[in-house]
Length: 266
Image 1 (cartoon, rainbow, N blue to C red):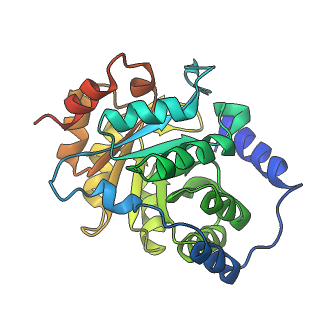
Image 2: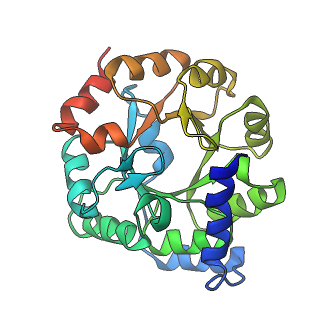
């Protein structure tokens, strides 16, 4: 890891330190049973009709793009994405670097629960502790993010077990062959290639070209970042992607529905 990712992870661990507490799998299972069910993230990505799944991201800013939509109301963007036929949403909940909050996730899932149909939502954050998994389930998420690069194998195992106990899917994010091998060793069901190197924020779609064909056949393959056009989407689909995760392009699109249609065009 280089300085930027080190900085983000160091901040995240400091940020959550005052609020974290021990969370057992038994507690997560009880919370899951007591809360309303959430739609399946995995099922939304591997579509029965064979079309490309599109995870539309709600993102106000990023270290690479700067401000994207500073004053955005997350539920308004969620409505636009649902109308645009997104398969699922990714909701940034990191405030310092991406301008999101856990409240954004809660607001979006509340909207979907009270005004169906609901789309499954990924809590997009730098997850390091089962307490964050508990927060995600209580906020109505359907999935969490596990960034393989920044976690030890025991941390990954703990987070994945916590997610399963809470009834959540987990998107394992990888960037290299060794990270792919680690995700497979943890029996990941959903693996995403981040085409953007989070250490230096450089994007390269050839990473999906190279890595996705190496995924086990039963794994749901996602290509993340750097998808701006229908041609980009077709390229990663040819590599074997079942879904794409798109933030900046959809946030800036005047017509998100048309862009999603372009992503799915043959």
